Amino acid sequence: MALLAVASVSASAQNTIYLLGEVHDNPKGHAQRFDLIEKLLSKNFRPVIAMEQFDRENQEALDQAMHSCKDSDCVIQKVGGKGWDWNFYKPVIETALKLRLPIIAANLSSQDAMKIARDGLGAAISPETLRDFNLDQALNNDLFEEQKRAIDVGHCHTLPAYAFKGMVNAQVARDVWMAKTIRENASNGLILLAGNGHVRKDVGVYHWLSSAERMRTQVIAYTEEESGAVSGPETSMFDQTIRIEPFERNDPCEAFTGRGMNDSGPVQNFP
Picture (cartoon, rainbow, N blue to C red):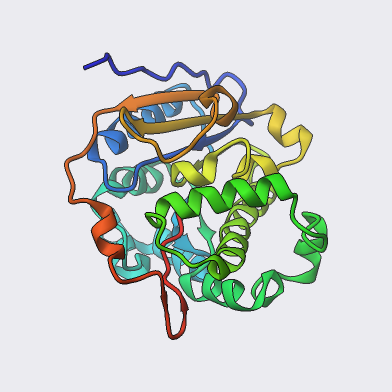
């Protein structure tokens, strides 16, 4: 097996924005990423930490938990939602508590994503935000097609054609909301923790950042060696690609057997 790459980054620029990806269920990837975070913090880098794992409507409760809790278990009990293996995120939360680093809830809720998938971007994104990110205009066709392709692969080619527009809208909305979170909180540096699909430079969060924000952004993916989840030259998608050993898991495509759309809309499985 090939040697695993090691990220080499510097926190000398204290306002740097780091977009750090993940394979959600791979423990080695989480461990390597946290090792990088510790190295950055050892250079006296004190960023805001934005996390895909917390939904935006829980920000007030998250702030209260970070103020009142003594450990990560308390924070997770008060604010942690379903669908995440919170053991992977405990070290980050513990470190944020210790160093008094703010944690920002960077994601749309599943409910808001479903609203957008059914009714369009305006169903859960304000008109002001739509204008700020040029979403009051049609999506760029290349971006739409690449997001469509990624969703198709992620759903094991089981989705009907009519599902893609709504699901692309939901994915774009989440990326845009993360970009908005960065814009509002990154003046003194920020680390975003999100899936590799969200941190892609070509169509993910980075795409929605301003030119000035991009200039101080580093994008690092933690990907499994045999992963085929994304296409195209990796150098165009990420600044660094850290190879991690594949995690043994059941075939994820088994979950989509006989599924794809149900009576209430697209089955939810956003990257």
